[in-house]
Image 1 (cartoon, rainbow, N blue to C red):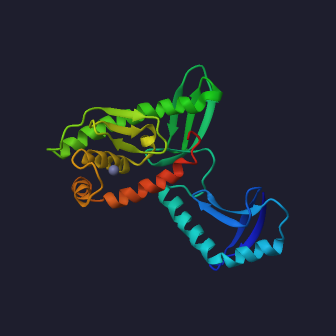
Image 2 (cartoon, rainbow, N blue to C red):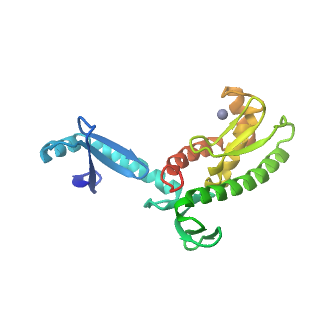
Image 3 (cartoon, rainbow, N blue to C red):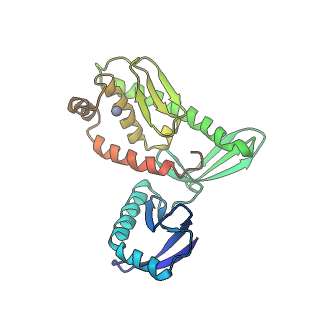
Length: 242
Ligand SMILES: [Zn+2]
């Protein structure tokens, strides 16, 4: 990995990371929640050529940098570290230590989650088990509360907590509600939105205007929560358990 400085029009100097790739036939840029980098063909490329490419893309780079800065601020992470983990919308540093039995301690003041695991090689599964339990507890509580607040909803069949990382939730034709075990990562109001979204599918198994009207009735701020959900989806990719 090498770096190339680029002067952005807001006055900052960005040290652009450059990754060489054998498959890249040309220069291209990639930006996501963890930052921005440039992919370059693995064969020798001229510094002048690379600099010129970055100069041409300056406006795009600034826009991308500013956009993801906003996303990180909204998710409560300014500098995303590789050991970041989220619980109920708050970002923590994850520390994994070996112990004789599984336990977990959450320090809000230190922004740290310490996981004591019995097998260091299998810590991801032990953490997933913990998320599973927490998500089950939270979903049970919130589901009951939301149903009490919105009488007249059709009944659901069963609730399943699934090992899904690509999908937050779904509603089946058998009226079962499925939730990803990672749901406990989200802020509580976003978890409520996900539950409300699936409950509304019990009435409308589509995303029609009528469906969104039902969602809005139960969650007037659903649009904000939907956007937040999208941002957390990007974050999930960078947690150590997915
Ligand atoms: Zn849906």
